Amino acid sequence: MTDVTRVTASVPALAQHRAAVAAIEGAYAAIPAGSPVRLAKKTSNLFRFRDDNSGAGLDVSAFGHVLQVSRHDRTAIVGGMTTYEDLVAATLPYGLMPMVVPQLKTITLGGAVSGLGIESTSLRSGLPHESVLSMEILTGDGRVVTAAPDNEHADLYAGFPNSYGTLGYSLSLTIELEPVRPFVHLRHFRFSDPQECMQAIAEAAADGSYEGHRADFIDGTAFSPGELYLTVGAFSDVAPWRSDYTRERIYYQSVRGPREDFLTIGDYLWRWDTDWFWCSRPFGVQQPVIRRLWPRRYRRSDVYRKLVAMYRRNTLAPKLDAWRGRPASEAVIQDVEIPLERSAEFLDFFTSRVGMSPVWMCPLRLRGERTWPLYPMKTGQVYVNFGFWGTVDLPPGESDGFFNRQVEDIVTELGGHKGLYSTSFYSREEFWKLYNGAEYTKLKDAYDPQGRLADLYEKCVRGL
Image 1 (tube, helix red, strand yellow):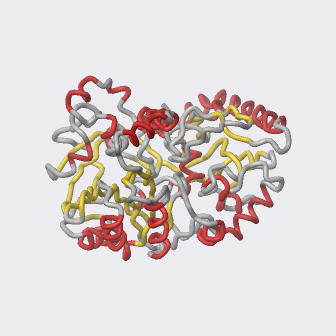
Image 2 (image 1 turned 135 degrees about the vertical axis):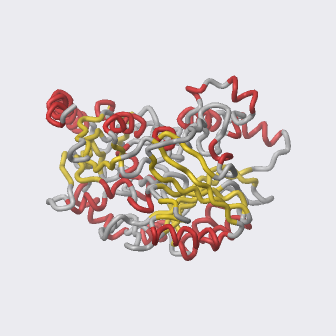
Image 3 (image 1 turned 90 degrees about the horizontal axis):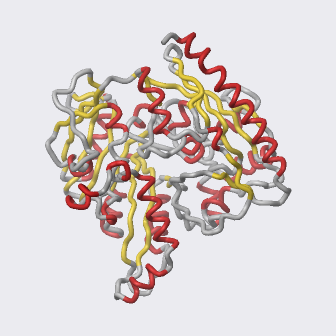
């Protein structure tokens, strides 16, 4: 298919998109002043569960489509509510993929940009918002504006990442794509000391490879301080064999050996989704008998998240735990970015104070010289993202927040930041110091002066 044909074929989709933009502008304007505003979305990857769904629900289903893919320009125009599952399905047939594809299929492009996303290409390609060329945004004051790095809304373009829908909602985004090869050749490297592992990341960051293996992709898994793995992936045109982790085998267990593996590019991009990293364990899906009986189409992160939401709504469950004499527990679900030089210190802290395993490790750095004010990271600095998702038994007499607050404190002490998709316990003063309250206030005044959308602290800490 030629580029001309693709552009022509996209004209009806673009026309429908324009009509959808006009419709959502009208729907937003019709919401009474002072009424809360929320999106009527079928899926979410946030871990701030709300029992109160009051407020007008804006129907954003019309913005869940890929509008255009251009092989020649290596770009795509994509609705803000489009899932990465659908985005990847639209680009791979042209030998292209987004520069960064977050790990879970139902993360939306708009969500990854406004809430930050990350994956194993982030050491060379940064974060998803860095490959956005422009964004069409419905702002808090009801306007639809185009934000780009060099236009009159450049401040909104720069401030949209980490705003979590508190300045507005992305209706479409024009993004860069990169060429792919059919397969990914993986090598798993084991380390028995966190500092040695971090030194290997430094080498890969400097050379673009590790022990002669090109680092098109790199992430890691820490099972304990004495058992850590870096998985380095290189695009490949050939695959002597192809592994499949959507059936009986489980991907995160495979990093322990053998040391070499091959996956199709599609299977590689979704290698973590089948078992939600390792978080399918509480549902029994990793037990061989249950795994054979559990339909493959339901081995997905969004299915597991729905099960978690059902459990949280079932107030009987905590009472049963108490009746059985089980200790109270705290959900410790976070992603944090730590400067590479301090990352081994963070792992030491986490092992001794929290003790949850495994822990995901993903190196990253900003792609270029541009900085993003609401999530301050230094250009040229290599960071390591640590992801940990589970529950920990609380010590006697302690309450919710005991572990999470310690994590917040050590992250700040080590010069890092944490993502805001889950629970936070910062004071208002702490929060705005970390997330650039002065710049946020300017943006809020410019694009949502009436405060129709919750502000970032109210949404991400107070859960409003």
